[in-house]
Image (cartoon, rainbow, N blue to C red; front, side):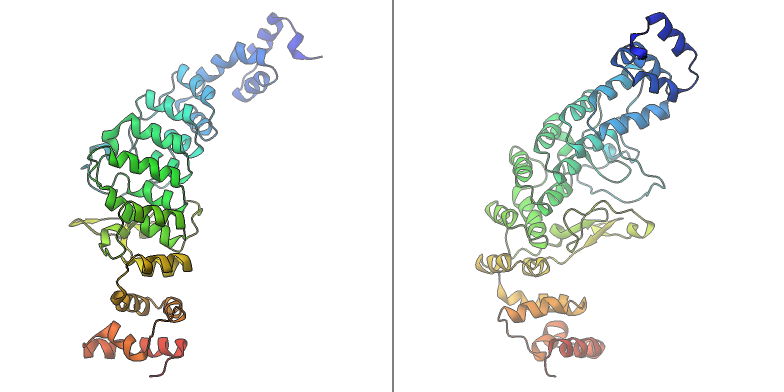
Length: 372
């Protein structure tokens, strides 16, 4: 016999004799009628830790109703992050100063990753900072941008423009959207940048996505970057700064989040300040195109006006990093590379450097089939 047809008095008696949350939840799931009767009691009996788990679980699945039930039962949602990022200088980059032992996502970040507009809007209405940094060093905007949720991106940007005004506020969302080829997201971000003074110019943003498009072979992104004013000969190293949780040039664009370890804290100087978690990549657009390996983009960079005299710096980078494949690609393009050119590009007139690099250069020339 179905429990659903029992009189209300008997159902109340059965529920009263259930002594665990698990049993009560099993009863509720048997009928919508029981959910209406006991949902509120079920959620109110949860601890703060249980509420936190349920809200995060629901945010990952876009279950706005479940989140509402927790809030109605008295659950609290953290409105700021543990790193107090909202108090840090507006133009400062994120710093990997602390790596939580057991990092957790924030419900807003999880909802943005899933693409739930209703859940994101609910959290924003509850006063959650739209640009908070969760314990994985992810932001809601980066997660939404990386997964192509343009509506969520626009909602976050419109919720508090000041939260996204700063030299580094939009760099990581721009990079992940470019690497994955989400052009509508990039257009939304550029529209925001062009609508006011955001401390990051459209031209600089174009330069940032140009490299990501070249590294990850996104032709549409590269063309869009050039249209927005990117310069193929601009070798400003700030455009190729990389934060430890973000994609490397040789990573597949859809790579899942890597676990952060203490070694990731090693950093570089960013705008005159030593900053943990950051590293410098090679600021050369033809080198980036060679890393990506898309011949269309290599040709596009050259045709757009790349200064071919910068080939020497590419050879120097390639030899020092032992990237002989890149040198082979240049040779296959018809670039004349000899042992003399390799020596000059790496060592110049420095006799000490020539002696120091002698073994590496000889091995490189042997692998490339060049005569000494």
